[in-house]
Length: 377
Image (cartoon, rainbow, N blue to C red; front, side, top):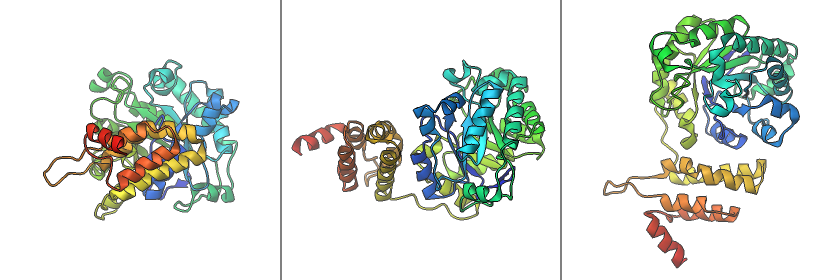
């Protein structure tokens, strides 16, 4: 069991703040399968939250089922980050996180994300300022009970804890020479009251290429010496990967990101295996189609039809990966027709029709076969 400051989580598995994907609908799907100890929002701009821009408010949207929830902020100005943290507390956050690991240019060029790994004094000053702000707005026991949800253990009272998510360092050469900044930064963050750190086992230069370095995460675990929890992140795509992350790093929790985009039930499977139980059977094709339908329904409910169509068009390739099955002759059955039907859908009814046809055995095989089937219809 993982404890972050005063927050006792029901499991030590966390859904990462995946940019562009970790909306309320997807978090809900993952939670409904089970095994999620904490789910994080997409990374949030504190300026956008404070101005009340539609995009930022949508990314931060939560509800009573979506508990406990972490809200991740990115930026480089301590005062703005502190104001954003207060906003997060006032709008339901169970945990506030500072992004010190995003490698994309639009974040690092504004001195946020993993650019903070090149200026540790700024990174620590931001964390210190946010911790101070969080201490000024503690929650009482009743509010903690609402924010923890049914699976966790609420504290009696106290401030929302701050966590930080980082990478090993900026330059790969620094990591390879043993000069990664992450162990030192983690100790400094613990000194100013940060309750836990998450370490993605890649450098900024690697972005999402290559293999995650579990020894790099282990260095941070060793440097912290048990003062605060360290959460390992990167390349967890099946339960065996989570087991390896715990065994080879000594971390206290595992954060799963892209590995869950195709298999939202991954948290359930990992938790069962980590608990000493057999891995559950994967959802049937019928159950997976129902899951895609559920996601689309939630997107329509939480936003609107236009946005739901945009999201299902771009995400169907992720959701469709586990739908492939091996035929009696050993070949994999093609599902391109199904993906194309959803990608080309321009109305909700067209999406539902594609799901129904696939569920009943249609939209399989090569693209040419789908064209012929469509023409016949």
